[in-house]
Image 1 (cartoon, one colour):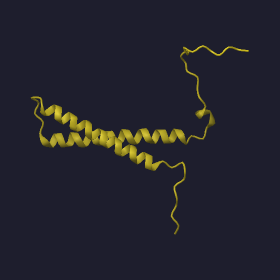
Image 2 (tube, rainbow, N blue to C red; image 1 turned 180 degrees about the horizontal axis):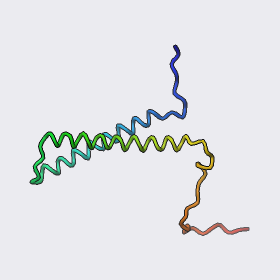
Image 3 (cartoon, rainbow, N blue to C red; image 1 turned 60 degrees about the vertical axis):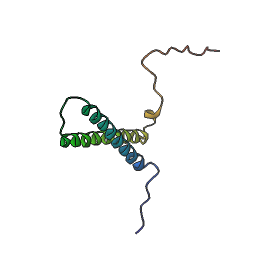
Length: 100
């Protein structure tokens, strides 16, 4: 059997790196929250602190995965109109170039 090589448009590695980065960012935020909570009078059991850390890590990973997947889907859109620069609804502050 021959191994199937991923196509050039496949961005699974980028998606996985984004997932890992999101998890690390979520765990970092969780650790910062735990450090802040320990310095207050609010009681927090170690079990709840652990699950808070897991939940924030999962949420960060989910955000990283979603952002990377959406950007990969946008890049792989075959519609040329989608990739054309669009005009802004707001008037630009730049003056248009003079007409010859």
